[in-house]
Length: 453
Image (tube, rainbow, N blue to C red; front, side, top):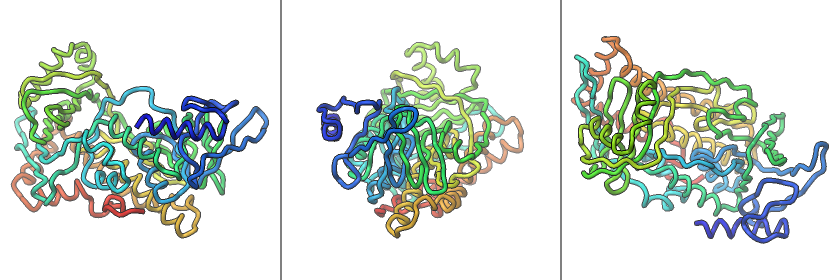
């Protein structure tokens, strides 16, 4: 992958700036453009003198701001459909220690886009999902197991380390002629009647018909569109890291429900798993000071040794938990996806899967408008209507489940225990919940059905 990317960068920069090598930069600008031009030719650059210095003016049909998994997926979906797309983001400076449990629809979308083949070998199937009530309360729920085979699937999805997923997305993005990459930080977004202009730290300005905000919870695109974010913090912090273990996981994800929050072990290839460990913030300082050996003992104790001897892998991540939802997912010429639109607790593998459904949906709407010769910037209100019900319902469900763990209110604890009991005992109900969780009937964009745009 590295040599292919270097070749692309070198060709583009060498042709435009007359300088060879992947590390060359345009004179007067501190950013680079990676990839071929929109029509398969090498990117061309036209400089225009404006007051305040040299600014490079670029155009595209769509600008995607942010290059996390959701932003990269949206950019790939659009470029694969022939939509001239620019992706604006700095390369990541820190390693993401988290993993992503990609449900079946997300895997199908990535496969349709040509991404899954590039990271499949680093993913582990999720064939069984188990919930264990590990609280000391009087009213405890029964253990519940969900098997993918019950609904005719080989696996609910796959768990993959984010570093491998992002590398696969980046590699696929580099193969697309209609995708232009600007490796710089967006510092301003200006919305006009006919276009959106994204200004970068290095002086570049890119104008597009539509801007897709995929830059996380501190979204410039969302602020420019005057969209409020509504939410609150949980009295919880998540620790995330990977570990090796002596016993096989049998492709089973186990979620222990403790009073402070879930303690979730998700399979990785071979005898490895990822852990999301939600605790009271007061515990974080103590846990952070534990050595790897001491942390391994802590994990083994809390997991009741179901995976045998534990060996903790570095690094460890710490993430305060919040729930947030944008007042609108689309406004004017801005569409919001991923954590720019919604932030959710790490329960039930919903976070990134919601973001990928966002990306697939906006990709479908924009591709249809583009092919019909319509203004792609006019799809945002329809996008908002299509995504709001799915995102809101899932966030409410996760929020309610999380609150039931934290609450000492006996009726709420009883309702939670009764719900899990009924799910365990009533087969049709359990299967309906599984199908809706993996493949929501009302929110399946074309990519997640395996259809190209």
